[in-house]
Image (cartoon, rainbow, N blue to C red; front, side, top):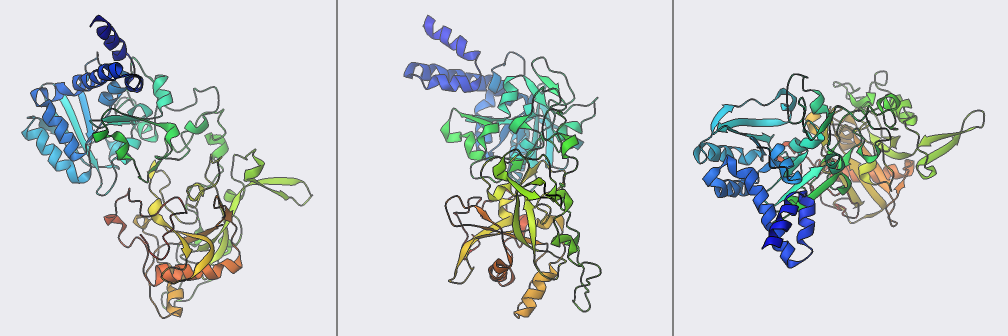
Length: 517
């Protein structure tokens, strides 16, 4: 018994990941470790529910609520000696009222406020702050059909990007958490110096809070604040489960969410710092996005929109920085005096601009920081088809593209994989008059909004990209005509489709073929 007590004391001082690792060594350690984990969880949550602890746990399971903030951090570090007075819960929009009713009716909490912090107002749809027995519980939900991870990843700092279910816990940027460092996100930078939100705007005994990465002496690497990451990328995300029945990994399994920490990097040693990247284009900037057509005669006004802006590679794309040192991802060309000049790789695609009078072959760069083999996720398509806002920290894009290995609704295979990128409808793009004209020529009608971009991949292993040429436009026209003009776009009412919907796959092997699903 004395030995078991000593082991328990040692495990209580370890981080949750180390405790779980120890439970897998032998049967005795498994028994002791599980008791330590459940004891830690209960000591953190029980003060907010007292005798109704089991009721609160069941309510969280039933409503799929996620616990974030200081309570989740205490579960990770094991620092439960300091009293946790705030319990922050995020929940799906559909379950908000059920959990709020439970807090008021069962736990006897009274509401303090229904107004969230202004820095998070753009992401939170409903909010409630409740109090009882000198304890505080905040309850928040995102907009309808938006995954709760959007709230977690829009947190004010890296130390706040942590959440747990009743059976597991997930943290983003675990390296910084172990170093006791918390970096402000763009949301955190919006918090005034005399205010507080999460770890932003306050001092911590065990955390070093920084407004950026300029304190790092070396390059940021893959943790650079301005680089986009996907939740499926495990290098910046660490999850630990202690109850597989309520596993935390289920919350991001097959979920389409990308995130970044900030819109810029202040680390002068990083190759993506703000001074180098300031010359890059990071907006949807094709000037032909607005209609240059006459509504009366339905003919292109070439004086207003001649398509010249898509005939030539824009300078912001042609000279994107930083220049890669990897010759595989570079194109070498000769300047006028014969000296070699290197460009970041550009993929040739077909652009069906909303204000163009015909499709154009355009150059598509790759996203910043891409070092591995190119995939559909790595193309920087936002210049041609706007799929996310300029200042956004989270985004979902898989549902805005479709990959085909044959002509939709026709028994005709094609010579490669053709992927169509669409614009996000909430940005209210203009009607695509080019597709309208193509529809009229075939006796059909359509009201597709926004521009469309098409890229091509080979059917060989690895699905490498192929630069499209004029001969490929025939198949691209047929795919767009059969899939969009005749049978409608894939997102007629995107607001009714969950933002975490993954009806389209990032892996081109899962082609939609003749159907959209």
